[in-house]
View 1: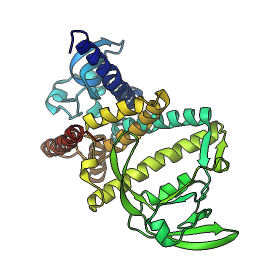
View 2: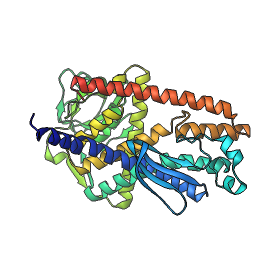
View 3: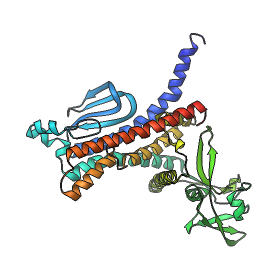
View 4: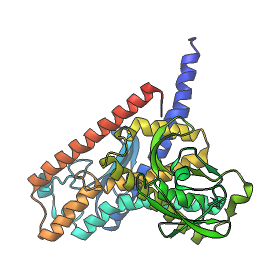
Length: 383
């Protein structure tokens, strides 16, 4: 390796691997924290810091309200720190609260009404869903919707479809009683229904025929070599241009389609977790920061549109993850507030501290496990 090749290799790594990852994650994290920040300001909560990333500050500034806006060294998250918070996880600092003046206590997050605290916490995940909806709506308005007619153009050999009796030219009319208008609709059922029988109604030469098929959990590989498992029946749309339907979408239709896309991600996430618990999915598919970074760099090679679409999908995923009822995450705070509403008073500070420690341990263990998956995947040379 000559003197010039090392710097060029490093530059290439930065531009193709690091920059896309930081770009996508920064957008998603910024809007998540902006949700917390905006609703906190609306509720007159004093915000001490708005940080994208963790660790030492790279650069930042103070606004006229005294909030420190900063970008930090480690671009793997972010936080908003309110007056009276002990740390970035928003654990209340009861000792500090007792020492505050009456004016300062009015701006402390912990002293706000229960519904106001819940609104501030819920605003982060909600902002993630709003961001995803805005991205999807814009994409659908610009590009419209492309559908593949639900006509069977190919049948895999020895597949569930072949055993069930599908034939070329069959048009799928419904699955489990739900209307099917495109091949994408078929995937909504088959991808999340492995080993569960599905009732198909198909139009064959003008006659409706009932077919029962059981999607099989199948290992597949995407264009980048990433392996994943999903439920498959074994039918494909074929390549007839007549089966491609292009539909322009206005703002309302595009928005409705964006909600549908978000719902699909939520549904698939739920079924993945369910099948993971049931042993149908392999835990090695869980990705940590390294895996997400690799996936981002791969998608970036396809163009800015695909990268922005990935940002929308990750925004939904991060919003969902933060709603998990795990202390330290937004969902854990909301769980505490629900218990406070039921009990009529907040949990004991010591109990909250123990719960936060348990939550932190669970999150760290999951991160370590996912990161180990990433390392093994990279060493193995697969996705």
